[in-house]
Image 1 (spheres, rainbow, N blue to C red):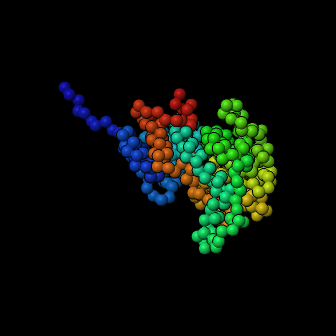
Image 2 (cartoon, rainbow, N blue to C red):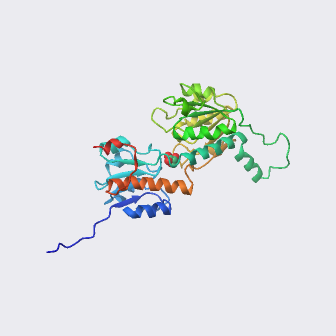
Image 3 (tube, rainbow, N blue to C red):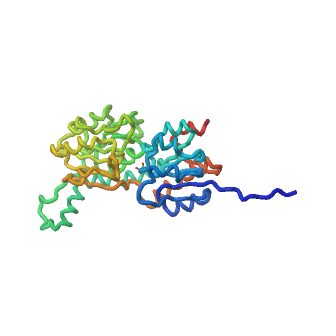
Length: 332
Ligand code: DGY
């Protein structure tokens, strides 16, 4: 007697933003894929769209607080984010529900460090101000004193958060002649420190930073760490660069400090509440403002997508592996 054969149902994956074609092709190996293609984040429609899904791949601008996680259908076995940062996901709520959360460390380190160098150089040379002047027809002639910036050689670069990305920024900045200072929760081994000068507090780091570069995650302890007192601790004519998270900065304090002449340039890729940024950013006289493109290269975005999909595939029975931000769930 033969048993009627049913085609084995493939697991279903919802992706809440349009990934690269390579990511879609990779995901399709394991999953039936649905993609949220609207220009706005999926928001409150997530639970409904996730009905019958086995896995979700969300974007850094999706907010998955405890309520949103609780509302997810029970069919969902795995969650991944198309980012290394997991601040937008309530990890404790996901863990309590037994939901592994995969993310994408390492593959974006070089791209973000490259972008940090772009911002550091732009800050020192006011590249965006010079371009604005050219576009506005204010480039009338070359003079020795027009559009002067600062040389990186000998300048102190203070790195707040000396993890993978901070270390990669230090490695890029040294050949420019910058002297590296840093603050990190734990002091690095001498070999990884490579001569960088450790400071036990953020304020001590600020006092020694001609350019202060933020590349830490926005943990609860670090939210708003760049406040009025830290900005006042910076040397005169200091610059601020942010490739970490907007939440690291108390933006009211920042705008007030710029009004008091505390900073000669702010160069940032990330903002509080992005993409709906505070309009006062656009009024800053000397600023380089990028729209969160740190990891935005074709190669890196595909590598991130592949890594996130592999994590999800691994919990849906595929021979793949991902990087889990709450690994305790997997060992239960
Ligand atoms: C990350 O992966 O966290 C990058 O900032 C992109 O969101």
